[in-house]
Length: 191
Image (cartoon, rainbow, N blue to C red):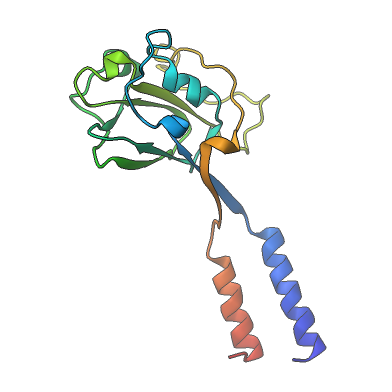
Protein backbone atom coordinates (compact mmCIF):
# COMPACT_ATOMS: atom_id res chain seq x y z
CA UNK A 1 0.00 0.00 0.00
CA UNK A 2 1.40 3.38 -0.98
CA UNK A 3 2.15 6.01 1.70
CA UNK A 4 -0.56 8.28 0.23
CA UNK A 5 -3.21 5.58 0.65
CA UNK A 6 -2.06 4.93 4.24
CA UNK A 7 -2.29 8.65 5.08
CA UNK A 8 -5.73 8.88 3.50
CA UNK A 9 -6.95 5.81 5.41
CA UNK A 10 -5.61 7.17 8.72
CA UNK A 11 -7.26 10.53 8.00
CA UNK A 12 -10.61 8.85 7.33
CA UNK A 13 -10.41 6.80 10.53
CA UNK A 14 -9.34 9.77 12.67
CA UNK A 15 -12.07 11.95 11.14
CA UNK A 16 -14.67 9.34 11.88
CA UNK A 17 -13.46 8.95 15.45
CA UNK A 18 -13.45 12.70 16.09
CA UNK A 19 -16.78 13.56 14.47
CA UNK A 20 -18.93 10.56 15.27
CA UNK A 21 -20.90 10.72 18.45
CA UNK A 22 -20.61 7.85 20.85
CA UNK A 23 -23.33 6.67 23.17
CA UNK A 24 -22.35 5.08 26.44
CA UNK A 25 -24.78 3.02 28.46
CA UNK A 26 -24.53 1.12 31.71
CA UNK A 27 -26.42 -1.91 32.93
CA UNK A 28 -27.17 -1.83 36.67
CA UNK A 29 -28.10 -4.83 38.77
CA UNK A 30 -30.97 -3.71 40.99
CA UNK A 31 -30.17 -4.09 44.66
CA UNK A 32 -26.53 -4.93 43.96
CA UNK A 33 -25.53 -8.39 45.17
CA UNK A 34 -28.82 -8.93 47.03
CA UNK A 35 -31.00 -8.50 43.94
CA UNK A 36 -34.75 -7.78 43.76
CA UNK A 37 -36.28 -9.30 46.90
CA UNK A 38 -38.53 -8.40 49.82
CA UNK A 39 -36.51 -6.31 52.32
CA UNK A 40 -35.86 -8.25 55.54
CA UNK A 41 -35.34 -5.34 57.93
CA UNK A 42 -38.19 -3.30 59.38
CA UNK A 43 -35.74 -0.40 59.95
CA UNK A 44 -35.27 0.15 56.23
CA UNK A 45 -38.80 -0.89 55.27
CA UNK A 46 -39.67 0.76 51.97
CA UNK A 47 -36.32 2.45 51.48
CA UNK A 48 -33.85 -0.30 50.61
CA UNK A 49 -34.20 0.00 46.86
CA UNK A 50 -34.57 3.79 46.86
CA UNK A 51 -31.35 4.01 48.86
CA UNK A 52 -29.66 1.75 46.32
CA UNK A 53 -31.02 3.84 43.42
CA UNK A 54 -29.91 7.10 45.06
CA UNK A 55 -26.29 5.92 44.98
CA UNK A 56 -26.36 5.57 41.21
CA UNK A 57 -26.67 8.04 38.35
CA UNK A 58 -29.01 6.81 35.64
CA UNK A 59 -29.13 8.26 32.15
CA UNK A 60 -31.21 7.65 29.05
CA UNK A 61 -30.11 4.39 27.41
CA UNK A 62 -29.01 2.70 30.63
CA UNK A 63 -30.63 -0.58 31.63
CA UNK A 64 -31.56 -2.04 34.99
CA UNK A 65 -31.41 -5.79 35.55
CA UNK A 66 -33.74 -7.40 38.08
CA UNK A 67 -32.68 -10.84 39.36
CA UNK A 68 -35.24 -12.65 41.50
CA UNK A 69 -36.94 -15.97 42.25
CA UNK A 70 -40.70 -16.58 42.21
CA UNK A 71 -41.45 -12.87 41.91
CA UNK A 72 -42.08 -10.23 39.27
CA UNK A 73 -41.32 -6.62 38.39
CA UNK A 74 -43.82 -4.05 37.17
CA UNK A 75 -43.44 -0.47 35.98
CA UNK A 76 -46.40 1.65 37.03
CA UNK A 77 -47.23 5.03 35.56
CA UNK A 78 -47.56 7.31 38.58
CA UNK A 79 -46.34 8.01 42.07
CA UNK A 80 -49.88 7.35 43.31
CA UNK A 81 -49.88 3.82 41.83
CA UNK A 82 -46.40 3.34 43.31
CA UNK A 83 -47.45 4.44 46.80
CA UNK A 84 -50.63 2.33 46.71
CA UNK A 85 -48.79 -0.68 45.20
CA UNK A 86 -51.42 -0.78 42.47
CA UNK A 87 -50.69 -3.63 40.08
CA UNK A 88 -53.81 -3.60 37.89
CA UNK A 89 -52.58 -1.70 34.81
CA UNK A 90 -48.77 -1.72 34.65
CA UNK A 91 -46.88 -0.22 31.70
CA UNK A 92 -44.48 -3.16 31.89
CA UNK A 93 -44.64 -6.61 33.50
CA UNK A 94 -42.12 -9.43 33.68
CA UNK A 95 -41.73 -12.58 35.78
CA UNK A 96 -38.90 -14.41 34.01
CA UNK A 97 -36.48 -14.15 37.02
CA UNK A 98 -33.93 -12.14 35.01
CA UNK A 99 -35.54 -8.98 33.66
CA UNK A 100 -33.69 -6.20 31.85
CA UNK A 101 -35.53 -2.88 31.51
CA UNK A 102 -34.24 -0.03 29.32
CA UNK A 103 -34.51 3.50 30.72
CA UNK A 104 -35.61 5.15 27.48
CA UNK A 105 -36.44 8.70 28.60
CA UNK A 106 -35.52 11.22 31.29
CA UNK A 107 -37.75 11.43 34.33
CA UNK A 108 -39.06 9.07 36.96
CA UNK A 109 -39.68 5.32 36.66
CA UNK A 110 -41.76 3.59 39.33
CA UNK A 111 -40.98 -0.11 39.89
CA UNK A 112 -42.96 -2.44 42.16
CA UNK A 113 -43.20 -6.17 42.80
CA UNK A 114 -46.32 -7.79 41.40
CA UNK A 115 -46.47 -10.50 44.05
CA UNK A 116 -49.20 -9.86 46.61
CA UNK A 117 -47.81 -8.19 49.75
CA UNK A 118 -44.24 -7.73 48.50
CA UNK A 119 -44.63 -4.09 47.44
CA UNK A 120 -46.29 -3.23 50.76
CA UNK A 121 -43.24 -4.71 52.53
CA UNK A 122 -40.91 -2.39 50.61
CA UNK A 123 -40.12 -4.20 47.37
CA UNK A 124 -40.49 -1.08 45.26
CA UNK A 125 -38.21 1.59 43.84
CA UNK A 126 -38.15 4.96 42.14
CA UNK A 127 -35.42 5.63 39.58
CA UNK A 128 -34.74 9.13 38.36
CA UNK A 129 -33.19 9.25 34.88
CA UNK A 130 -31.12 12.37 34.25
CA UNK A 131 -31.72 14.76 31.39
CA UNK A 132 -29.33 14.27 28.43
CA UNK A 133 -25.94 15.94 28.86
CA UNK A 134 -26.73 18.61 26.24
CA UNK A 135 -28.86 20.37 28.84
CA UNK A 136 -26.97 22.80 31.04
CA UNK A 137 -27.79 23.09 34.75
CA UNK A 138 -28.51 26.84 34.37
CA UNK A 139 -31.05 26.44 31.58
CA UNK A 140 -34.64 25.88 32.64
CA UNK A 141 -35.97 22.47 31.78
CA UNK A 142 -39.34 22.16 30.11
CA UNK A 143 -41.95 20.82 32.49
CA UNK A 144 -45.53 19.81 32.10
CA UNK A 145 -48.22 21.45 34.20
CA UNK A 146 -48.83 18.24 36.11
CA UNK A 147 -45.16 17.59 36.92
CA UNK A 148 -45.19 19.60 40.13
CA UNK A 149 -48.18 17.73 41.53
CA UNK A 150 -46.81 14.28 40.80
CA UNK A 151 -43.17 14.65 41.75
CA UNK A 152 -41.83 11.79 43.87
CA UNK A 153 -40.19 12.19 47.23
CA UNK A 154 -36.83 13.85 46.86
CA UNK A 155 -33.95 11.45 46.54
CA UNK A 156 -30.40 12.28 47.61
CA UNK A 157 -28.01 13.48 44.93
CA UNK A 158 -26.48 10.45 43.29
CA UNK A 159 -23.09 9.53 41.99
CA UNK A 160 -22.24 6.76 39.59
CA UNK A 161 -20.68 3.75 41.30
CA UNK A 162 -19.05 1.25 38.98
CA UNK A 163 -19.43 -1.52 41.60
CA UNK A 164 -23.20 -1.53 41.02
CA UNK A 165 -22.87 -1.70 37.26
CA UNK A 166 -22.71 -5.01 35.47
CA UNK A 167 -21.22 -3.57 32.33
CA UNK A 168 -20.72 -0.36 30.46
CA UNK A 169 -20.96 -0.38 26.70
CA UNK A 170 -20.01 2.20 24.13
CA UNK A 171 -21.77 2.19 20.79
CA UNK A 172 -21.60 4.46 17.79
CA UNK A 173 -24.87 6.28 17.37
CA UNK A 174 -24.79 5.82 13.63
CA UNK A 175 -23.50 3.28 11.18
CA UNK A 176 -20.87 5.76 10.00
CA UNK A 177 -17.97 3.40 10.49
CA UNK A 178 -19.48 0.86 8.11
CA UNK A 179 -20.08 3.61 5.53
CA UNK A 180 -16.47 4.81 5.85
CA UNK A 181 -15.19 1.25 5.49
CA UNK A 182 -17.26 0.67 2.35
CA UNK A 183 -16.06 3.97 0.85
CA UNK A 184 -12.43 3.13 1.65
CA UNK A 185 -12.74 -0.32 0.08
CA UNK A 186 -14.48 1.12 -2.99
CA UNK A 187 -12.08 4.02 -3.49
CA UNK A 188 -8.85 2.16 -2.85
CA UNK A 189 -9.89 -1.22 -4.22
CA UNK A 190 -8.90 -3.12 -1.07
CA UNK A 191 -10.29 -6.61 -0.86
